[in-house]
Image (cartoon, rainbow, N blue to C red; front, side, top):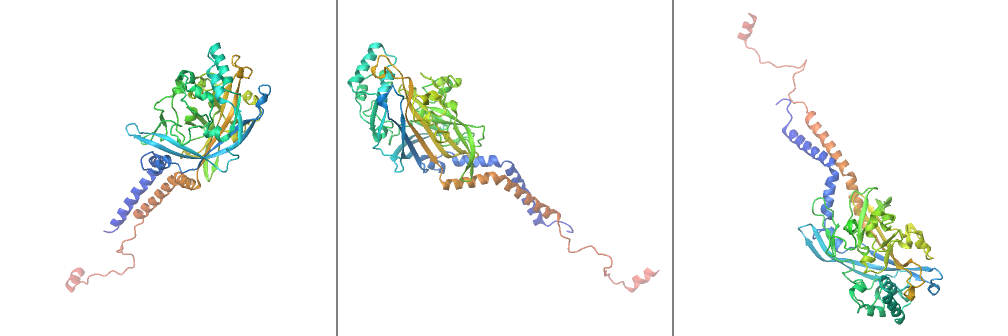
Length: 495
């Protein structure tokens, strides 16, 4: 037994060595381990925290609407329109995903979105404000008739005069927004075939957001990935309105791409591109890195809508397939194809990054990148949106038509109607959780490596530093006791 290590030390050393090996392995693969844990946490599965927050978001949502009041309409077209921005008319938004259906076979979930808006007292203005803007109903009718024959256009011109249609309408903000207002042309449109109305459903009133409040048809039918299957992300759009492509476009533009905006890729860099599908635009848009900063103690990358996303086909050839009709200006999207043929064009507010000729055609616009850009501020490692400002402006195309008296002398231009900002900012309690999660990601590998090093030190101590045995070898000068010899043995020794 002399010099042998006790059994308990051997067991202790083996256990520490195994734990040290595990710590080293985990530290080397910490990023993948963390991603695996996060993927399970954010996957859209029934009962998960991620699903509960997705189904009925608790984060405060607001929609700010800015209306352009046309102050000199009586002098048009001799004077260019002077526009005064009114608002914001702020609405608190409540959102819930309903009619949720799980598709286990392909790892997806289908749903519709129920939205409701309530006027917020922090608004800068009243819903009773009187606003003068371009008559969109008349503009749409004239645009739809641009390919008609001479007689048909003349009949439309007389009909517009007979029904008292003017270049502008002046209505309270509440009617222009959600409540809507009656118009004789809407009654006429109910009697026309779908080919003449672009397939637009018959309505009894017109408003910019009419019939959207408390509706599940605003965003349409959506089907997105759940992120359960390996290598997939949750929230990626697979089908929209029961189709896996966009019927309004062709080639590359017809593809459904990106997320619905609630879930974004992880491990984003300054070279990453974020793709988001926007139902109101009937297409996906790309956001590129704009700047980086810190929000609530968390680093973020800000991704803004790339100027080429709103560009026309003459400057960006890859956008050619998005151009269904008139694409005379850069910096705008022609969305008339998904708006029942109405002359609808989308830009950033105040024609930011658009053709300078558009802003020059009116007075009162002051584009500002800080106020009018469209961006997502994202925690890059976790892919969590910290701040979102989704902004876009609706413009209506008008152009001269010699056969229709109302538009006989108008210039060809895009007329700004309103712009909207939907903003979301992550709450402080969630920021604290994200700071904790980011600390685990950043320091987890280091902690595991340090723990493994400590365990290896304990192994060395257990195996190398063995205490001396209690029965040590005799040393010089020590008294050695011997068995006394008897008398006979002593005599033999003397011989």
